[in-house]
Amino acid sequence: MTRMNTPNAPDPRVFFAAERTLLAWQRSSLALMAFGFVIERFSLFLAAIQPGSQNPARHHFSLLMGLILILLGAVVSVASIVAFRRFVRNLPPDDIPCGHWAGLGIGVNLVIAAIGVTLSAYLLLTAL
Image (cartoon, rainbow, N blue to C red):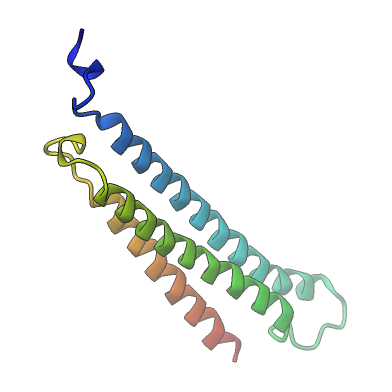
């Protein structure tokens, strides 16, 4: 019988599965933010191709929808951090590989959330 088959043997696969889930949520939050930015800027494109357009910056609906998606991406990023930390806190210490930098995914998600909030504030201030 190998060590991995014993009931109390450390199993880092559980930790790595949780980390992959965190990274999947990270990609989802980035996709939401990118889609929100595209929606917010798409109204400028539509205004540019419309003949006789007076003011292309006055498209509040696309601004609102874009900001909602960008902020939703930031919220998803923070929520995934909370879920990951709760799960890892319940793991036995032996299941977390020694020397593994477990906080890297959390740090990247925090930066993504901060960028999303900053981008939202910038888009809102430039639209006003």
